[in-house]
Structure formats: structure tokens, C-alpha cells
Length: 235
Ligand SMILES: [Zn+2]
Ligand SMILES: [Zn+2]
Image 1 (tube, rainbow, N blue to C red):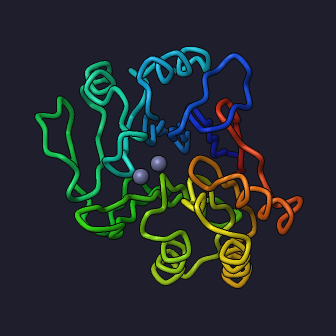
Image 2 (tube, rainbow, N blue to C red; image 1 turned 60 degrees about the vertical axis):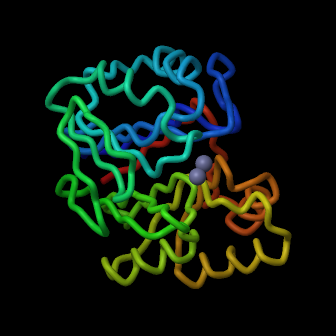
Image 3 (cartoon, rainbow, N blue to C red; image 1 turned 180 degrees about the horizontal axis):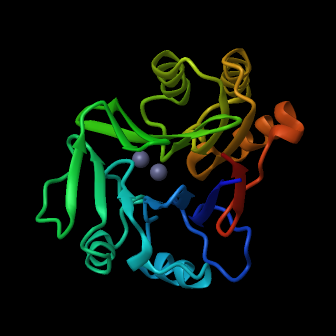
């Protein structure tokens, strides 16, 4: 049976004591024959050190996706790309700063298929800001990976539901709720439930309150994650 493996390389919180945490996000997704790096965190030194700890060689990465252009997601971008195999494909949302990238780049305007089980969804996240989320297909349902969820975590999930018409198994990443109070977070938890999201793994800019509320509401369907966490799903 094949599996989807997701490893958190960079996050506000720490799971593996040998790795460095910091405000930002990065994860590596292994699915089918692909190794997809999603974001690179905020601090290049910490990011490279975490990669080394996790035993990840950038030359093995087949695809790199940046969720959006904010500094807590794109650390060391040029160095990262320069260390990659020339076959590596880069996926960024439209509006991402144009540079002379050393690898093949795709600017996704709303939706793209990255691989047979991997999709990119781009939504407007603010003035001059577009954000890319990834959608993976597992045999338990869809897995949605977000960077900061600036377009709104519920809006992202509603768009995924409308486009795919399939069950959402897991939502992992930054939900951007760190400034929200109990009431607004509980409303979002309820919306997750009505969208029948089975599992939640809020991290990065989700905020401690959001993480606690999701843990409460989801119990066994909650993943506590941080830098160094590895999650494996059957696909
Ligand atoms: Zn952001
Ligand atoms: Zn962020």
C-alpha cells in the first residue's frame, strides 16, 4: 500500500528537540514518486539545519511550492532553488515576485494539477496577495495543506469542497487565527464540522487558542504538530 508522508520542517512550535522552531512554516510531502517541498520558513539557517536533521537532501525534491510571498514562508529561496536538481518544478501563486528562477516555474492563477494526486488551489488572500494551498488525494479523503490561509481557512475549504465534491480528511497548516477570540474560533470549528472535515492539524499562525479549541473539539481527530512532526497516511 502506498502512503503519504508529511514532515514539518519549520513551524512556530517544536516537536523534535534537535530542530529549531520559529515563526513560519515549511513541510515536505512525499506522495507517489514525488517529494514536494511546501514553503521554507522564515530563517534560512534554521531551515537548512532542520532539513539536515530530518535527513532531507534538496537534490531529491521533485517539486517546490511557495504558498505566498510573505517572509515567514520563503527563507533562503534563491539558495534553496540553486541546490535543487534542474528537473525540479516550481509552483507559485500568481503575483509572486518574478525572478530569474533556475528551475521551471509555473504561476498558478487559480487551479493546477501538479501530479495525479496533487493539486494547487490559488485564492485571493488580500490586496495584491494570492495564496496557494495544496490538495492531496488519499484513500481516506482529501488532505488540504495551507501556509497562512490568508484567503480564509473556511473559504479555502468551501472552494475545495465545491471543486472536488469529495470528503475532506485532514486540514494541516496555518489557519491564521492567532488574533481571533474564542467566539470566532468556535464558529470556525463549527464550520469545519459542518464541512465534515475529519481531522485537523492547525499550526504556525493558527494561534494557541485555536490549537486548544481544535484539540477540544476534535479529540482523536486532532494532530498536535510542530517542527519535526511526521504524519503518515495511507493513500
Ligand atoms: Zn502570510
Ligand atoms: Zn505565515
